[in-house]
Image (tube, rainbow, N blue to C red; front, side):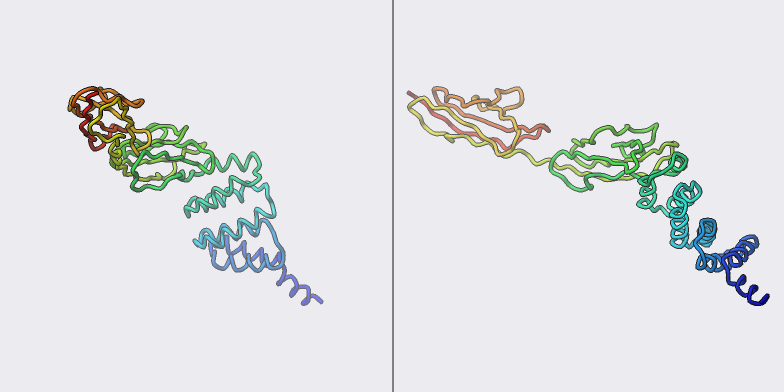
Length: 286
């Protein structure tokens, strides 16, 4: 009977757990995890899962450590230690997806306070870098609701360098502009820098067109000027000089003046880009 009891004990949770703790004390983590696994095959236990996760972490078997801490948290959802170890693990392995997911749990105040001490991850950009033919507007987002700071001059942003993000970043400079951004968490820790480079090459406005396009007239005629480029302003002269923004702006059909005259028109967009010149001869004698 005694032998039966000993045999039963030697295959119990308590036995395996005690052996695992002994291996832990000897810093023999490889054997410790073997016995924690055996103990947990007999009964699920919060302390055993936490110890198993810690040992797998020390052995750099991070996936198994994650699984153990996750089971521990399932057994004790209000565990500060489990949340702490998981955050530490995800931060070290740069697993932003899982670290961000912790913030979405139904956390206690103590758990939420713990997470404030872990590095936030870089913000996301609504628009990837690349080549564009017009201004770009970029929305920055922090999954955890942390403050975002950004720069447009190539430097690394921080609380003390750059601008606090409050609205979409609009880039209007022709050429290359690098947008750098970081998140800063509740404890002042700064994330890695997220960066995208936008290269803007503005397309010159389309050449204006006039109706009628020119010619001889014997009766009063009005000229309608159009441009395919939306938002471009049209300027014209009748003295063969090159129009500028100081010239007369086209706002409505214009009458052909009496005599032999040259109409010159250009389109200028919001970036100051000028179109090719439209030029035509209008001869009007009533």
